[in-house]
Image (cartoon, rainbow, N blue to C red; front, side, top):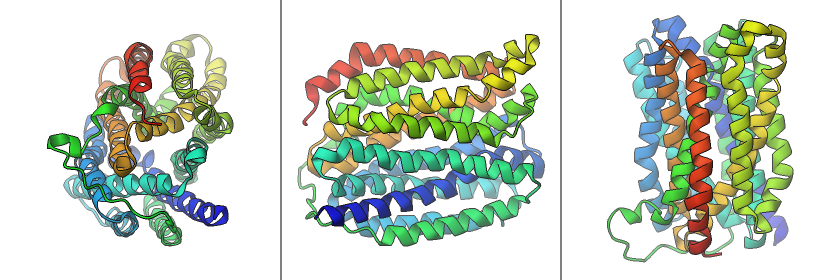
Length: 399
């Protein structure tokens, strides 16, 4: 039995890694592509890129409802295939408006397939290994979220045409779909037959407070992953900017060696608290680099590649802990709704970060001000979690 769920779990991790890799491969080059190809402003870049978030936000609540009502794997495969096919549109668009349309379609399919994938993994994992399993599943996703941008930036720096980067995302997405087809769920499906009224059928209201803290934490993440290349050029960083994401991956992997086990041992709240504090430290340093650059450019070159390790450690603690928190607040037949609420909170934060980052980048304060605002949001998130969201979870958790 263990061999069966382990094989499916590995297939799910591989499929989602390639799904996220294909998606995040394009994130750091989109601003450069829109500016170079369509002469777009930074504010317009933020609006266009964040449009996927709006689509994901609209689809996620309905996806959670449908995934709790009907078998999840067929829905997962259909959404995965639509997600991959949407990539074909990027090399073909000739206007910003068409690019925006493709982005919206991509956001909708991404919102559905990621909710379905997260729900399937929860179904596959035994309860005693859920925190650890979600931790490793998160490693696969978050590794892709850093390896993807690193790969595209390295390709861009070596003069690879944007079109070939688009083609790479299509190929990796198709390979991911093959792995997705290999997933087997042996547990009997339990359709949600409860008569849940109103908006609660689409959203796990018990997770609202935790969702607020996760949303605030996602805002600076959206800022620095999207505008890192622009910020590095403003600072005059000498080394390859792709190295930033490599070191972010190092931090994420390192933290996952112990974060999942902390969750399974009942220290979920502490994992989130530590993660928020470590993330705050990294973001504060990132916001301070421009000021430090006036006095010591060499120190900035060093800090620029220390900061991603700190951020990786912080966010690596947060992802599995938050994921488990939402699942533990929901009954078994509402797991997909719990996953939807978790991802909706994160997407809303990241999408807001894209818009706010673009706005601040065009303002007098620039990206340092954007990162400083994001730092303060993480600090507020920490205080709110310690005082309200964390105790609320301990009172309402089901397992």
